Image (tube, rainbow, N blue to C red; front, side):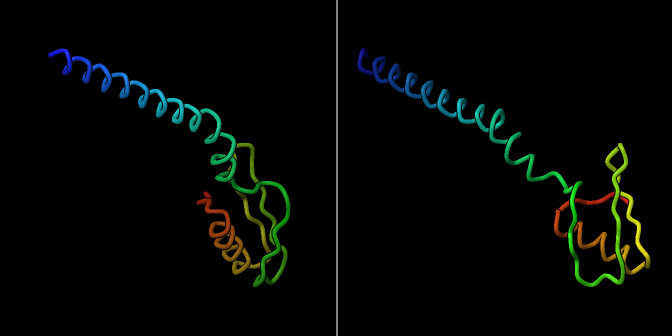
Length: 96
């Protein structure tokens, strides 16, 4: 009977140590790795220039204070081309 109690005590302590290690790993991931690395990569490019082939003229994209993009171009083809390329390249479903 004492052997079973000793065995269960060791299993219990081992389980607690394993839960502690997993908990520290989860805390690190959500506190440090996710906000600084994963989340930063998911944000769309809002400053700068991108050169795309297939456009007839210049296309300007502005974001208002709410973050909604506004696309201005010379032809309808340019507008749709810029929207589709930016959505594909950045993985951002743009709300137009």
